[in-house]
Length: 529
Ligand code: GDP
Image 1: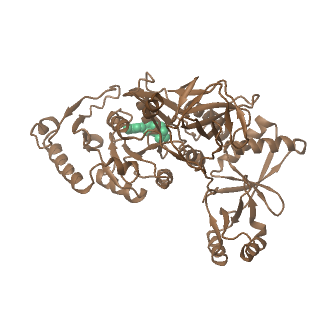
Image 2 (image 1 turned 30 degrees about the horizontal axis):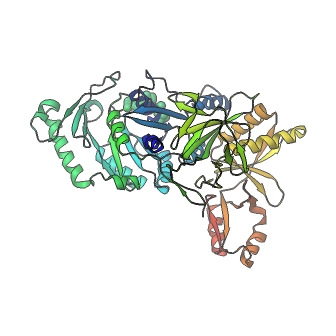
Image 3 (image 1 turned 90 degrees about the horizontal axis):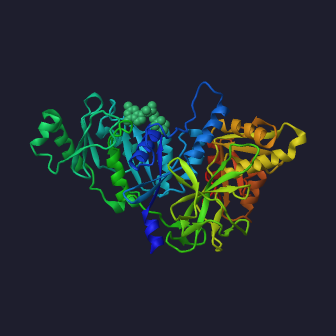
């Protein structure tokens, strides 16, 4: 009973956006509502800043912050809310994809003036593929921006979503008067006072009430009535089932900076967002309220102190409770591990806890036992699915630049890959190592960390690869597959799991290869079954 109650209180979600849309600002306002922080400015942005400092120094700074902001938890209306931080910088997109495997829903922040941007498109695509319920927050209404209906159209078209506005702006930019809350049927007037934390709302069941003119003026009242008429006509009623299946996305408007429209968003969120959901393992579906603990590693964070090579592994608890000093099975290693100081997160602090519940995230100190995707259980052999690798965008050979330190280099590379910093491939033909990354910045991170944490030096050499394709033969004993392997020998490699990968040098070559070897399927993600 207690277990069910605790689990049903949990809401674990991520905020995704293109950089600068207002993710950090919104996060902070949400924490203010929960009373978890006292003042604005307490949540640090983990953005990579361009400019003054060299890139890797900036990355080190960012790493420090992102430990602190990895999970921000707070209580609101008897719910325990866990916000999982997702880096906005595109070079860290893979980190965000993995974090999305640990959330039960997301809030998508969109800048009213810029509309749907590139990074939003990519992240939403991943959420759509996994049917993650999404709420959309259109931000910066205090500024001039796009027309609300045009934006809703853009969201539907560019993101492939079906939306329904649950709030609607009255004016915009200089003329911004407030929002009508379709969900609660009230009006919230904008005062532009950013210090006000709790807004005053005016209940308004019927927008045809002539009182409306008195409050927002004749022109705005008329416009609002027309707009709402259109909203009711064009958009479907909110349907929680459809939202849960990711078939319908509610939209809110507001201004995070002015803490305006944020309460409406949060109130709706706690009412509709899903509690911890069941998760598929290769063996079976695991439900959150099962007694036995299960969980998986979705993120590994190296500590800042290079002298201690310990790391923090972030576990999403899928079922049951995680208890301190209790032996759990590390499934990949088939051994039991006990944790004496599991960290739980509250606002921007972390503290040791005795018990955590399904939906929660715990941070475990690790000296190299874990890699991303590892499963922990109370004894059952389970492997959670859904932490795929995507084809990297950049490929470089990695060479040892100090022959005396070959061992250190190997160890460093292996550990960094376990953390998910980049992907390692080994060419079939000559065993040379290739590092694949999403962004060029990662090469600097790797070089810097190899040197500072492992005392090893490396150099890179470009490798012109367009995409890594995971090879999936219909019949691995066929003549066709044997010929494919012979002809493409020079372009074949193994990933870290030993899966065969084809390095295609162009989109054309992928197309030609598929035509020539129709029974050898090529995939852009590692987990295709
Ligand atoms: P992130 O990159 O998505 O985390 O974006 P931030 O939260 O750091 O916000 C980017 C910039 O937009 C900052 O300068 C914020 O002060 C500003 N900003 C955020 N929300 C609003 C808003 O509602 N109105 C205005 N005018 N600016 C905002």
